[in-house]
Amino acid sequence: MISLIKSLIVGASAYFELRNKAFYYDKMRESRERRKDLIDEIEKLRSKRTNDATDRADLLLIELSTENDLVEHLSSLFFKLEKGNDS
Image (cartoon, rainbow, N blue to C red; front, side):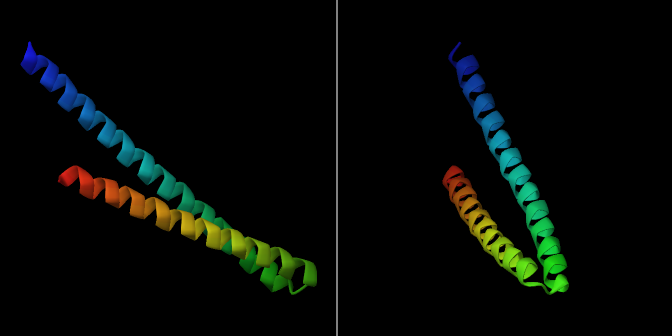
């Protein structure tokens, strides 16, 4: 009976670890797509060479910087958690 409970706990732990990894990779993929879209939009706006387009591109550049910071934070958190699982 105890071995069954232990197996269930190990199985649940493995399931949640896999779920966390899938969540992380999905978020990273979404972020990569979002950053690519932002870069493309910034390039289009910069090529227009108008004041309004330049202002909008500057705002998108700030948004891109924020997205990069978020990715860096998420990555460091994920790898900190992963390192903790190995111990």
